Image (cartoon, rainbow, N blue to C red):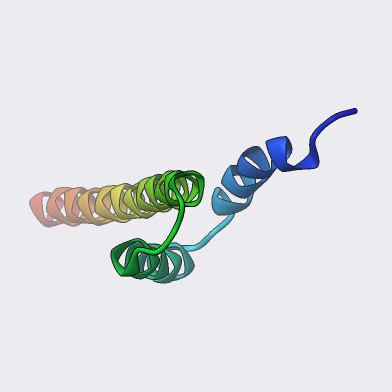
Amino acid sequence: MPDPAADQPTDDLAEIATFGYERARDELVNVVKMLEQGGLDLDESLALWERGEALANRCEQHLAGARKRVEDALSRAEVDGDQQ
């Protein structure tokens, strides 16, 4: 019989991939607070840490996308300025 808990991390990661920047950041802050408070067993701590890593990666994806948009806009503005 399959263990439903075994699919949980994959489901969580798929869900995190849909998060906007603010939601991922806010949840990451909560994960860090929970880990800092302690009192969790090893498995719970590892699961939270893995979720935190996924949330941090999602934030980095958003920031990289934003950085590219800014760089592209600046490049277009520079080209437009050179043409005038």
